[in-house]
Amino acid sequence: MVLCSRIGPYRLYTFDLERLAPNRELESEVINAYLTLLTISHNSVATTKAAVLDTFQLMSIWSRTAQRMRKLDPMDFDILIGALNKGNHWIFVAMYPKEGRVLYLNSLGETSSELKMCQQRTRLFMELQGHQLPQWRCQTLPHPQQMDGTSCGVFVCKFAEFVLRGEPITFSSEGPAINRFRREIALMLLRKD
Picture 1 (cartoon, rainbow, N blue to C red):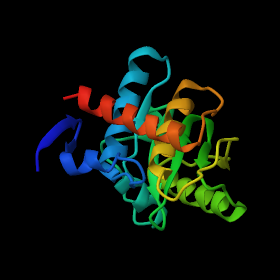
Picture 2: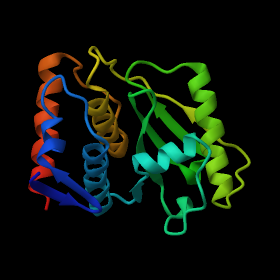
Picture 3: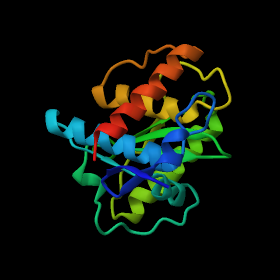
Picture 4: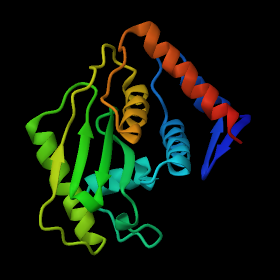
C-alpha cells in the first residue's frame, strides 16, 4: 500500500485510486475526499458555506443510529453534501438546513418511497441536532441516468459539482465521458496532498 494523497481526514492509497479505473466501483474514501475538495473550493469563492457529511454519517442518519454531532451544527452551513450507499449503490444527498429541504439524486432514478424516506430520515436528523423545522421537504432534480452498473460513485461526484455551482445537472452518461470523469477525479485527488 502506497499513500498517494491525503485530503482532510481521508487517506488515499493506490488501491483506492485503482478503483477509479473504467468499470470499477468507487470506494467511500475516494468519494468523501473528492466531495471534501469540492466544498473547500466552493467555500473559497462562494458566499454560501458548504460542508461534507461523510458516507458513515449519512449511513447513520439513514439507519436512524445518528447521534448529536458536537463538531457540526447543520445550521452553520447553507448546504451539506454527501454520498449514501444503499445496496452497494451510491446516491447523492444535499441538505439545505436553512431552507428546510433536502435534495436526493439517484443515478438510476428516484422513487416516491425513496423521497419519502429521505424526508423522514433527514428531518429526524435535524431534530436530533436540536432544530425543529416547521416544514422539511425532499426534492429531486432532472439529471442524466446511469447507463452501466459501476459508475454510480462517479455520478455522485458529478452531481455534487453541479449542485455546488447551482447549475442544471447536464453531462453525458456515455462510457467515454464517464471514463474521462474518472480520470479528472483521479487527477484532482492526486494534485492535493
